[in-house]
Length: 78
Image 1: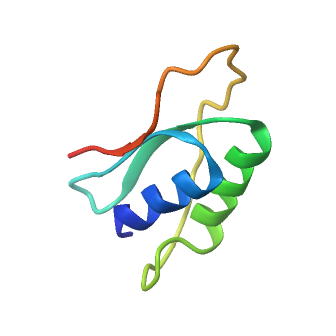
Image 2: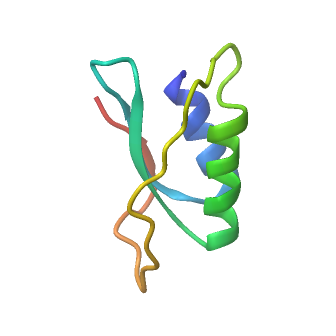
């Protein structure tokens, strides 16, 4: 998955956090924001992803409600 498309969608939805590619060819990250926007981002990641990507499986773990946000924006980590 091209991480720039992920970053663009995060900005469009107004979520914060980060994403990075792993050496195993997967993508991992954290997303924070209002529940509706986080859910929309999760559905985009699960069902669509970036153009040309093939999503074989999408696991979301450690969901939790937070009173405050740790991230000021959405970034791509290397």
